[in-house]
Length: 157
Image 1 (spheres, rainbow, N blue to C red):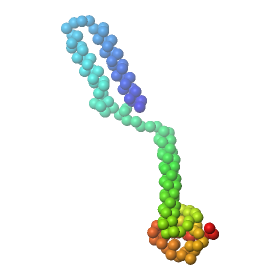
Image 2 (spheres, one colour):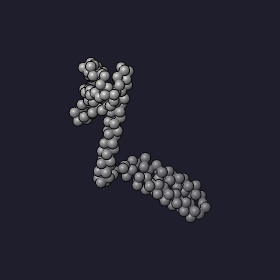
Image 3 (cartoon, rainbow, N blue to C red):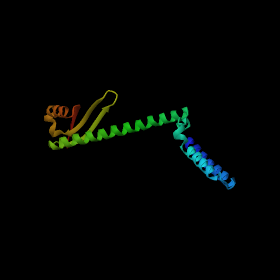
Image 4 (tube, one colour):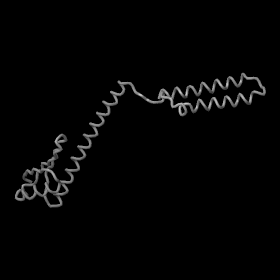
């Protein structure tokens, strides 16, 4: 950003210098030549960052700024991971609720456990005690359908 400010300042200074020189030059046969030289000079000033490939236009932040950026990036990444994990849990809970509701099974609670370090997912589901007789079929059906471990608990309606 500093390099852009510096470039803009140099353009303004060149414009002012050219204007003052034009006003001081007496009217003569050299006036047309002077105007052309001034125009070429000003165009050269305008295009200098592109023609000269000035390395001053490259933004290279100080080490402290880099550390701050890296720290903010890690925090942002952690927040994004937490939000993604929360959304994944909510979606899995919703999908389990809908799946069991379609089968006519009353669900009291669903808790999704995701272990990100070991890549393990499991679900704890509390159902109505009336479905306890179908325990093994429900566990195997949910495990095969969703691909993760399911533990069922029961309570009275």
